[in-house]
Amino acid sequence: MAISLVSLRDRVKSGNHFITGDHAVAEGAIAAGCNFFAGYPITPATPIAERISWRFPQIGGEYIQMEDEIASAAAIVGASSGGAKAMTATSGPGISLMLENIGLGYMMEVPIVLVNVMRGGPSTGMPTLTSQGDIMQARWGSHGDFNMIAYCPSTVQEMFDFTIKAFNAAETYRTPVMVLADQILGLMTANITIPEPDDIEIRNRVLASGPIEDYNTYNWDELIPPMAIAGQGYAVHMTGLTHDEHGYPDANVDAQAKLMKRLKAKFDTHLDDIVEYDEIMLEDAEIALIAYGSESRSAFAAVKRARAKGIKVGLLRMKTVWPFPEKLIHDLSTRVNSIIVPEVNMGQYVHPVREYADCPVHSLPHYGGEIHHPDVIVQKIEEVMQ
Image 1 (cartoon, rainbow, N blue to C red):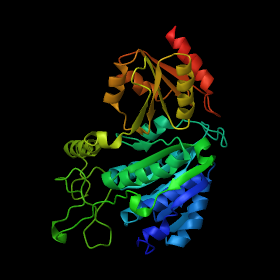
Image 2: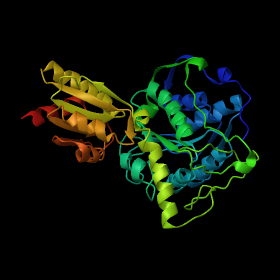
Image 3: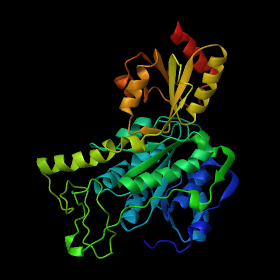
Image 4: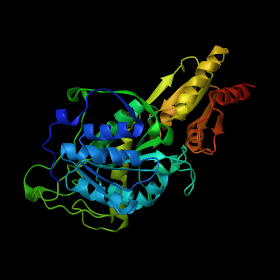
């Protein structure tokens, strides 16, 4: 995949813009250097593809509408293996179809970005209304032991910013990365600022170098091995099978253990660099809310309303929901009396919070279609205090 000859300054539309969250994702991808998109239309993620299909011809990128989501995920794995920065965008049912190839990307250590603009489910559910029902799917959806980095924006500005972060993480750790947005953020219109190109941090994968005869597809002397581009001259062999450092199948217990430990270690050893969050009014809090995505907007409003009533409550807003910050949650639970997890599902993120918390943890579920009204969260806070 040839890299676009259009300069970064010509690609990036710096300045202030009044755009939707989906369009902000598209602009963030372009700013990050994305030059290949494969996808299939699905509400409420289609505007991302529409924007990219309009913008890519201007910058020399490659856009292709595939026959389905399975093919879309396969296409971006292949494009990235050929040197492109590749992404797709879909919603929950599409992610379900992509999951096998997401696992393939993880096993082959191919950097790809997937944007899930979540909607009500299961099945077709509520295509035009919001949900956070894909939280566990993002982490555990693919078969086998795999790991996922998942960013969770809560503003249109973060739809732009976190898309860039997702590409940077994918390139840095050679792994699939997901942006978990939702229908509210995807279709919301707001002012955002796109920085000048020199002010945008862009990371690129470490490419193979040195003598061709010394190259191994997976040099296990390094936790994150340099990546050779197919056609560059190096012998590249990738497979979804358990493999050795040369990339050839080696399906035995010892090889599986060695491979899986290294893949997991990429996340464990860089956890502090990956996990991002905001602590809001938690200094003296007796009750903590843990929220993410558009729901954190209601949670923040609830914190302000509860504080106005003299209730000491704060908010831990997760910018990344995966990998899970075990120590962060445990430490928080030793500083507060109770934790409440409001989310637009029947209770998903609350489960790992309970696993690592040393204080009572309360779920505040919502069946979907809208986020909680702040007063509902305040009512739950008051109930917990009794």
